[in-house]
Every structure is written in structure tokens, then in C-alpha cells.
Image (cartoon, rainbow, N blue to C red; front, side, top):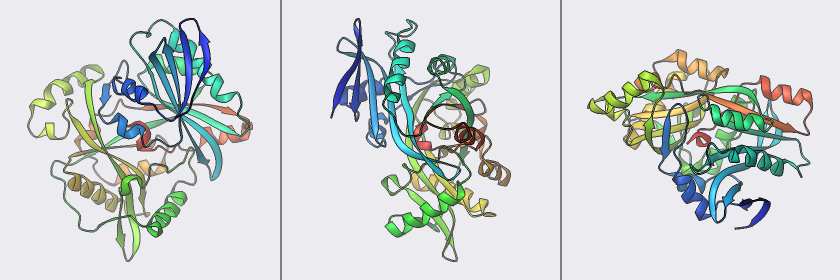
Length: 352
């Protein structure tokens, strides 16, 4: 695994790694995410890090100890059908030892400069910041990023999910090609579209009618520990819900296991089949709750909401918006305007 020291200042230096070394995995596994709102821990961090698409890690060190990280996942994204090079920032984290000292803001600016300086292609850089996380917002904003849109966190839950014998697993090249074409068409008028996490571990399932796919989605199994939720309602949920036998099957903050849906597809007018698929996947994995993410202005999101009831877990997520922060290099004003104006595509894998 290649690494280079790119910048040194006093007791601190920045290393660039192609891939994620073990020491960084251990550091990220120790981080409690969020700030001023929900604070939570990812309990399958290493598993997800190993599945990242083309990761480049910038790690800030004090001596031999990692104090901060930023992982850039390099990929192609589509904007209104046109492809652009993209670096998406994940795992932007700082240890308690340097928080509040101004170190992370200083080094974040330096990292943003390093990732951009030799880029010759038209490139989009973006990061996802929880709406209540003012500290991260200010750090990323000070590095030249601007707010280009909002992603909504959606929930789906059933107390007694029904199994679905009509679900079919996509595990052939022919099936993947069919689904890929459907997804490209479905999201052709969106920005930041990529399907890198679709088909991971062969977890894409569909429902067919008359040999035609009418609903489909990929799922990831996730385990979080929730340490805090925002506001009085959040504190009430944290205290009361785990004590109620039926409700704690939907949401147990000490062990919140859920499915994350993405690559969501439905044929026009078949939204109810998507609900049936969601429910069938919950039954398959013996879980009660799922989350998925969609742009605030995404027309698919509005149709899904209108068609049926998402379930109780969705009501817990009203204050869980995500802000998309972006900067651009070598792109025209027209191209940048297109990124900003189109509904934002969201991959669930990027939020778990």
C-alpha cells in the first residue's frame, strides 16, 4: 500500500495513502460521528472501508499518531447524462486531541489544495455534511466548498414484514446489464449519479411481471450505535422507545441494525411493488427497519412518499437532512450550473 508524506509543519505532517492502512481503519472505527445532533458509531467500519471505490486517504499525524482523516473516493459521476471526474470526500474525522485547536481547519485546507493541484480533468469535489454539524460545515466551507443541495434521510419500517416469494436476486452479468440500463434511464436527469455500490455482494433484488422488472433495489446490512439524538423529541425517543417491547424492534439505539436501500427503481405506476420489495427484503434479513437517501427535489422521492406509508421509523428522521457541499475545477459556469440545478442522486453506501 503506497504512502507519501506531502506536507510537514511543526509536530504535524500529512501522509497520502493509496488505499486504507490498518492503522487508519482502527482510528476510524473509534470515531463517534455527528455533532450537535445525532451522535452515532458505525460498527462495521472496516467491512465498508474495504469496499470503497478507488480510495485515497489523507491522514494528518502528530508524531506517529493519526489525528485526522479525509478519504477521497475517485469515480465518474453523471450530470444530466454527461460524465465528469469526481472526488467524493468520506470519513472526514478528527480525534478529540485536536478538536477546538484550529488544527483540523488548517490541515483540511491543505488537503483540499493537495488533491486539486495537479488535476487536469474537469472535476467535481463534494462532501456530505449533516445539517446540524456546524463545525464540519464551516471547515469545509472555508476550504472553498459551497452548498449545492439537500439530501433527505428516509425511513421504511414494518413491525411484521411479509416475505415475498416473487423477489428475484440479480446475480448474472445479463441481469446486471439490464438493471444498469434501467437505472441510467431512471436517473438521467439527476446530478452526481454513480452506481458503484449497486450489486455489491449480489444484494440487488427485483420483482418482475410478465418478465419485465417493475421494482428493484440494492441493500446493505448496517449496524450503528446511537449515542444521542437532537432536541427534546430525540432525547425522549432515546429514553422511551428502547423500553417499549414492540417499538424497540424498530429502533434500539444500543444496537440499531437496519437495511440501507439504494439503486432504487420502479416502473412508472408500480410504486406499490417497490413497497412490497422493501418489505420482502426486511423479512429476508429478519429486520424491521430500513433507511434510504434521496435528493430533496428528486421526483422519485415524492412519488414514493405519495404512494404509501413508510412506517414509524420515518417519523424519527425529520431533522436528518444532509447538505451537499461542492467545489469544481476546470468546469464551465454552464456545467457548474447544471450540477447545482439537477436533483441530487444519493448512494446509501456513502452514508453508512
